[in-house]
Image (cartoon, rainbow, N blue to C red):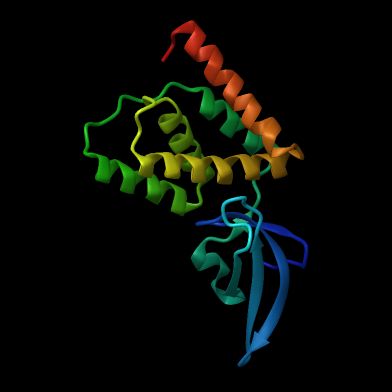
Length: 165
């Protein structure tokens, strides 16, 4: 993988990042990334270029893949397995940290449809997942993040009105 300054890439744990440069230290080339996320807006990540694949740094999804993800958000939540809060929290956290946007979309879909009495940890995970998901879809489709959020919110409202949940 070769990225130039200004390119946007996805870092698994933090979502979309802008390449802000490279540097050479002890004969190792590092790439410097600045997070785009509202939740991590001042975070700079420095990674050896040779480790990009191992870490899972990837390109932003295509607009077509973004459409597939938006469709995934509309699907019904599968029957939830009975598990305690801490196991469910850990499973959702692992999905987010995987960097796989489909898994992140599942977290958003599933937690968005939970009862309003979610634990604070789950609310934080939902906020993080939404930020990562909406930012990448917005970049992919050349939209505003607010537009992406509105698409999902309108779909959720329609489901609630239809009593489909």
